[in-house]
Image 1 (tube, rainbow, N blue to C red):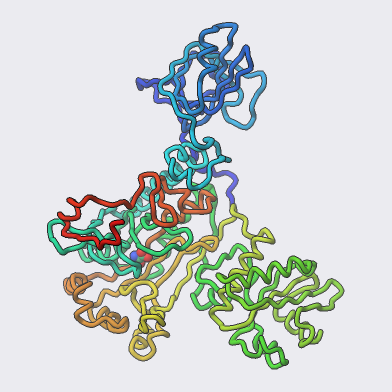
Image 2 (cartoon, rainbow, N blue to C red):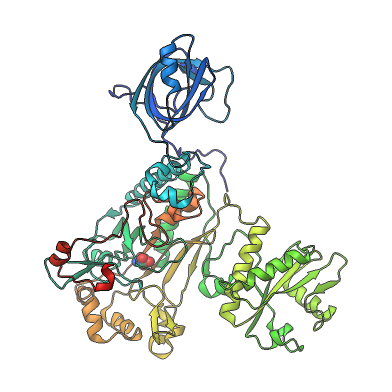
Length: 607
Ligand code: ASP
């Protein structure tokens, strides 16, 4: 809920010049108001736009703080006027002049009540015509903007997001510092970490055949810091994961990484719910509700997702028992029949329903088809399966959904996991269509009690669902040997508006239990020793009980900034193929460098 009295941090700094500073300007382009009228000022910035009206030339000058209108009057100074007429877009200029009240006020910009009657103009630098307009609604496509990212970053939308990111990092540090957390840097040149993605590797010149790996997270180091006695650690830290293209991932991204000693799960959750509330309050001006806790099993059953968007209900209703056995093959052969109630949508047209059917049949969603039931206003039912189900049957379904006349039931059937995940997509789509996913409403929750392990068909072994240092729930430890897939973990995710913002766990701090975990994961003794021997050894020197969490900082900023992609809130992001097209990287290195590193490329790679 938005709290009326609260004042969120300005997304822009006020931009008031620090007086005694000797700078090329007296004020910024976002600063001047009516109370400055008649003052003699000097501004510097970029030419946003210039309008030549013959006798008068109007120039908008821009900097990080805003835009101010300059007026060059031919009648008062012809030479100056002519100089202004020649200004091109993005020229860097310095202007001296007098602040005047505008007769034609611009209500959209904060400086819109005034203009500067220019008296002197210095061109500090010229600019080529930029390849796209430096406006919020630019004409530049993604590729072009990324190639000229330094120009893209001049656009106000981007400057706002980058400044917001800065504010969030400062406020995170303030909150954690107040809670006595210590920020400690951990190394980037390390060896493989346990997050389960592919490592980026860096050849070592000095060790000849040795390679460093870049950290997928500081996981092992932060656990070692707990053993060292720094009982509250955090770090805003770059992490590196060499993953194949998946939407909205970056090979390098930033975490707010945290770890605490002498805590249980609720202590960690409370501390970081506090961080989230602090950021909501100071950055967004929002008092957010307490976060409910939802077991993983419930999240999957009710929403088909471990990151449910709880801004709206539309919970899943299972129908297998009432819908099977009536001769409809699709249902009869399904492991699960499950649906949602799109309230008030009984008037959906054939075309709209066909579109929904096409939506669920998209390969990335993967349903075979969609069954609908319209609960008409007159109390009758119309469905796509009328041949198999009478009005009575459909009424029984509607009761399950607590449906009212006017509602529309949308039902999927098939293999349970796959059907739930398709219905999750359909629920989110309906949430969008019905305007139930307002970006200015925020609902957060903790998803808890994740399974400890998941079976991987490809490698035919268990993988840690979080990572191998996550502790099982005490009451489930015996399952590690008996039925590993049933063991639940002391692991948790923070989810806001259907976005996984962070996740963590209480760790194993006992060497014997850690050994059991490695065995369940199919590590041989030697493998475990080679990869994590240092940590196992450290566990022998008084490891305190500990646990932690890491937040995807980029994603959190994107959520607060209302931007679609984490790329929008990273100053210099990579594209979907992991390339930085501005600096043209990755790129080849010289023969000499290769030689020094003892690396020989295969012939076909050189071309
Ligand atoms: N290292 C974990 C991750 O990157 C977070 C944690 O368990 O604290 O997901």
